[in-house]
Amino acid sequence: MQSPTRDTPVSKCSELARYSARMLGKFSANAVLVGLAEKMTCGEAELIAAQVVYEEAVKAILPARVDVKYENHVSDRRVRISLQKAEIADGRSGGRIAGMVFPEGSGVITRLLGESQVQAMIDLEGRLAAAAPFWPEAEAERLVIAAHRQQYQVALASRKVAAQKARDARAARDAAKEKFLLVYTEVMSRLVAEFPRDRVTQDLFFDEVRTRSALAAADTGAGDEALETDPAQG
Image (tube, rainbow, N blue to C red; front, side, top):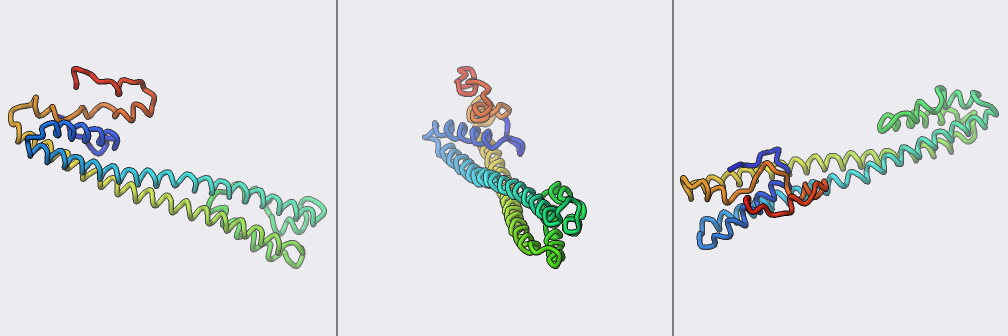
């Protein structure tokens, strides 16, 4: 008999538990085995519930990632537009207004990502405010840049929250897995005690641990082997 470990995928743990529970249920006249079947089923249900929560939390990261990438894109474009407007106000490239607002050009801002770009945009807002006496459009530009920066900050904060929720859900899933492993080990021990020195009967209640689960095999398109019944293995 083999026992799953922390490294055993959840889908395989679920498959192992369902196999054992069904086999144990075949012996309905034995109250001990029926109780062990129920115990295994409950352990598997708790693990799967925690896994579902974790998977949903992981899925929630994707839209947050998209939002951040989009806000980065539109912020970059708007920063470049501000530079173009400053150059138009100067009537040439490298003039006084553009030099005040964008002393190193726009690339030093747009090449950045995340919180670094947010800080660079805040600094840009400060330079736009300082340029107001020289450029009538500076305040309007500052407000536009500030609006984009705020949207960027919201997207970054949402992504951070989503990532933390996923980490928390994973911790809960891992705890549920530890509990499941204890249940599985307990069931194995109880069966050894129930059928001492009868390895054949003991092995009857447990599936092969080292193979991939049928779901994992199906997900990778590895073929129909996992879906077929091997008469020799049961």
